[in-house]
Length: 196
Image 1 (tube, rainbow, N blue to C red):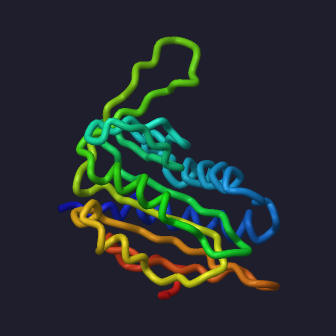
Image 2: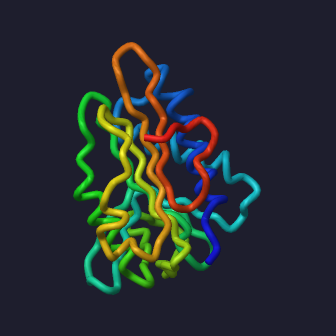
């Protein structure tokens, strides 16, 4: 099984840069702002990867459950989903993750998803179907005031049992830069991150 260390490192590096260069100077004030800055940094990190597509809050049609979810970020190559990211912005409180984890858990349980561009108007662009494989990386990243312990959901929920995961925490505190914590089963802890 091939690990998604390359995309995982891109995401971890992008998160570190966004926290240090954007959040710590007051440029991020909402989850939407966090999405935008992370998207721009991911594009920068993945330059030279021509087959990468980054979707922000795409409408994902799940074949297995016949429902729609909207993860914060979905990164695909030409044929499959390589990373699904849920973000949380709660720098003054504890991050609630239940809804986020249910959404990406539903994607993890499916074998294919369809991403449609429902709010697009222009030259025809068909909906795309992407495979979910055992190498798809499922990630959660949050700016929050709490602990950086690994979530139990990665090991307790059967939907994630055959997938790699990545958690990136920016643990906020008064009058100091956030403490960056990384939990993952996909690769070794990247530079700049601490253990919980």
